[in-house]
Amino acid sequence: MLVLVYLSHRIILTFKHAIFSLFLSFFHPPPLPRARASEIKFEYDKIPKSTVATRLKKEGTIKWQRQWESTDKGALCRSFFPEVEQRLQVNLPITPAFTAMVSGHGKTKSYLHRFGFIDSLMCPCKGGDQTPEHFIYHCNILETQRKIMIQRIKKSGGTWPITNKDLVAKYL
Ligand SMILES: [Zn+2]
Image (cartoon, rainbow, N blue to C red; front, side, top):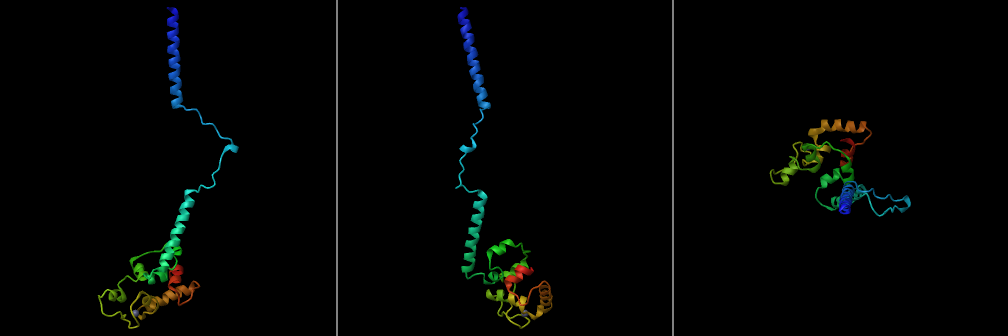
């Protein structure tokens, strides 16, 4: 009888120990074995996400540039921004008036005439069709403002006349 009691006590203790060990191993798993430096395998064909992002952005810009050069739309805007990458690097003070000038989609007579709202494109200065480029380079009504702009451009080392591209890229 005494032997049976002793054996059952031992069995219970062993069972408790097994449960406790299981509990410990669950909440405190043993540390993973450390790899030796000689065992570490470097995979050189893997690329960081930032590199992938940079490459995709570059490919996108190249594709965008190709489309920008091949389309027959947006000729005026392209004369101001011929290179997509250059445009993306510059933070421009974009206003409705600026957008109207570089896109040609403003209340100029040429734009209104294009959609049949008025009969004549002629600028009130009688110096030519009223287009954004007429405003910038030729309009007699804006002679004073143009003189100020030319003075500022020349003062900072530029020349006049100037291309649309340089006007936006260097003097905006
Ligand atoms: Zn004019």
